[in-house]
Image (cartoon, rainbow over all chains, first blue to last red; front, side, top):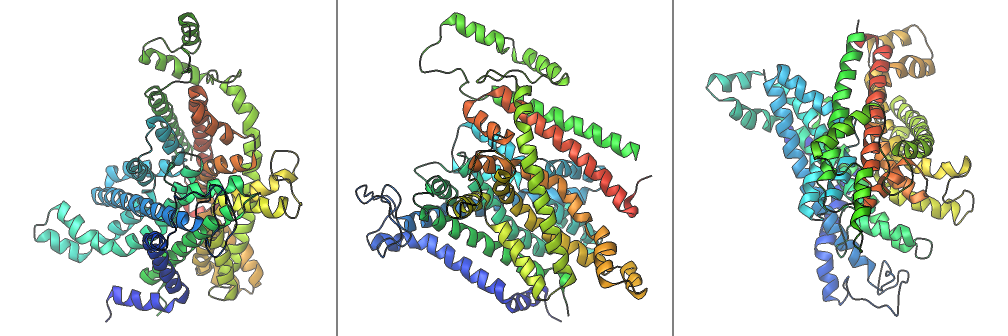
Length: 285
Length: 304
């Protein structure tokens, strides 16, 4: 008898591509977080301008080239990554908290409440919720990151709510839950201590799959000018700049674009691997 | 069936009303207006403008008239352009519709093909290749893919026009960019649906009767295996609309998304609310059609 987690870990390790992706992500996070300090110690930063030199392609001094103001692109991409990762993780956390509580409440309440709550999710599913974010962002005129986290989180919780609801529905009449109820545990305790911990596998899987989506949403907003604002730059803003100047300076697009696409690819792949490892459905042995 | 349709329709109207109300009050609460200029406007001009756009009455009265007008499909006048919102939608929606349909066609054809191949060759090389292609499609943001395609096919190889709408050829790059992401998702949904379906008893019966493998997969399997894809069409179209904001901007397509984004920076409230309500109505209608189609395709869920 092996535990679910031990079993999952064993299967994940067998999936060589998923392990490579996990390693790549760890390196990428470290690169974005520590990279700028190392570069700073070596005398390269993202703000020093060298207008005389202007934009030039990759060289030994500037591995990803420089932008038209002569700023080093490598460090800019690292700093953009810090911001993109920060937004992705925080907004995903918001989405998970909202989705898990919504889904668990809906399933546990059952009946009409459940029906009404799930209809709301259905409706939101068929709606371009990003449009709402656009309207709210343009109305509020704030460009604060906190608002960005909250808004992206607020539109990304629906899948999580559905998954958790499904889990809780299948768990709530199991013997161990009945036992807890017989011992006098209230609904809040049952949901928080028994139902949610037992749904943790799918929650982790879908949180991992949510990360790339959230990252794309942030980049999308930054691209149309509503997300992260100058002087801060995220991958979305860097790519937007690069796309404008790509005819003359293609490396401004290719560098940040490639880094962003590989990160999203790795996240997606890792999410798939985690799902295969944790979802008993796909278990082969 | 009729009850289901009527119920959904009522729900759709509630959504429409909620969206119209939300955008109305949200935009009135916004700081700064479309007529804010560096220079002060003479009072009589200002009064005239406020008269024309119905900005003087108390908010609740404005809201009442706005709803009344909506019912008669009158979205008001643009504050920046000499056109009514209805005219703007009628002029520019066709570009978006062509682009969207083309993108959807690319996404569905490519996605179903990849998904079926992956499911039929489950856990073999073809499966891994097809799934990697779809993951790459999902992972490259449209604003990276779009400019890259332009760089390769327009500016280096000179095969296709880089931007602006002309004939069919000018739609190829934008539609591919827009369709790529959904192609990946559709491929994955098809694969999952097909794997599930191919385990069913009726498939085993078909095989036992000696039906060729090709007919089993493409005729018997696909019918049920495609159901998840059909449910996804509603959300896919919603995502296609927000995707069109970026793609229309990159390729300078004069579609509705392009003007929607422009109206944000212009603070052109009637256009913003009008287009928002238009999008919502379209999606509500589409989701209704998807629900009905779903019922017709899967006899198990056919509602009497």
